[in-house]
Amino acid sequence: MVSNVGNRRYVFSAVWPLTCGNAVPIRCGRKNFVIEPDSLSLYASDPVAALRRIAFLMERRLEDTYKVQAFRKAASAILPLPIDEIHRRVADGTLTQIAGVGASTAAVVTQAVEGLVPDRLLAAEAKYGGPLATNGGAVLEALRGDLHSHSDWSDGGSPIQEMAMTALELGREYLALTDHSPRLRVANGLSAERLRKQLDIVDAINTHMDGFTLLKGIEVDILDDGTLDQSTEMLDLLDVRVASVHSKLAMDKTAMTKRMLAAVTTTRMNVLGHCTGRLVGGGRGRRPESQFDAKAVFDACAEHGVAVEINSRPERRDPPTRLLEMARDAGCLFSIDSDAHAPGQLDFPQLGCERAEAAGIAPERIVNTWPMEELLAWANPVR
Image 1 (tube, one colour):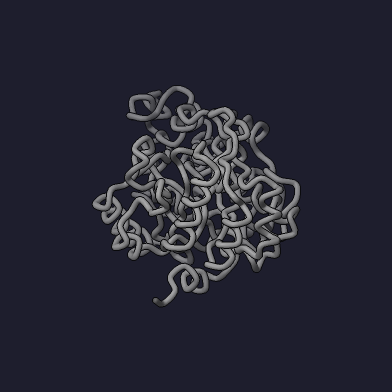
Image 2 (cartoon, rainbow, N blue to C red):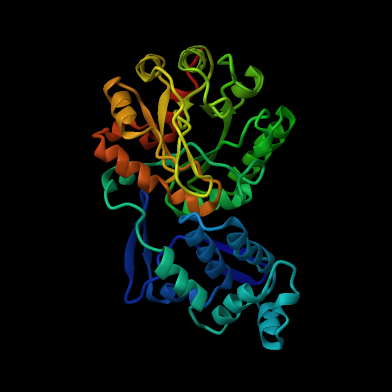
């Protein structure tokens, strides 16, 4: 990703691998890049790139958010500064006087400015780098976009622009911004008014993105009676609608089935998000699956053209394998999504693609392998 800021030309991709040698062809998603030899010293010449790369690597391994934000804040703090000022501050030891730059991030900036690959980046590459999955490459190759992501407008950790830029760097053609709906107050869910404002920002961002589209979306709560936690008027303004159960996950099986069937069969939802709500590990501990008649729900999804999400978050792995295979056999469509709450987590679909391949799900049944025009026609049929 190349950008001109002030008197400085940045090449600050967070996703290019740290490597060495002659020109190296690499593939990120569906896009080909060639890194020339002088670009291999990227992280030894550009502190913004180094800081973003460290944060990206930590996020994709679910490191502590507070630690990650130190690197993101430092990158944002120095991005607007002229290169001469950064060099002067390195020379006189005043980097930490910049709001958002601490001792550890100043060390990264200093080493990068001095033409060195920062020690902290080398350590992060060793600890967090490398593929997230062993298999699933053919499905990942086919993947064009991601239909489930969050920004700092709800419970994500980064601005919308940073999420979009990272998705572009990963080779995605589109990313749906799906912040939470109003009832999920713990996640700072968006009111209709805030959602309207966000849609204007999405439009503005898209005017500056070449070869990439940020889609207008929502992760909307499925309420107890199966209705959705946003007005039909607002849902009509969106490109994609992920609907998920976030409350009363231990509801009686019969009631939960009725709730989910009502949402699938009577609302404008496009994707059924993390259908069991389970957690299999991670910082939030473990949580059992919600109980519902999975066959009935998946049959309804297949009949109504609602995609079943393969949620790629490692602590979710939702749906479980037996239900993933049941949805496959029911003839469902699927969406392999990151459910990213930070830029580095946009790399999670590697895990979902591995699961889809293992379950024998053909790429053409995965809606986010489709060209954007086809995806939008499916999500917004003429009524």
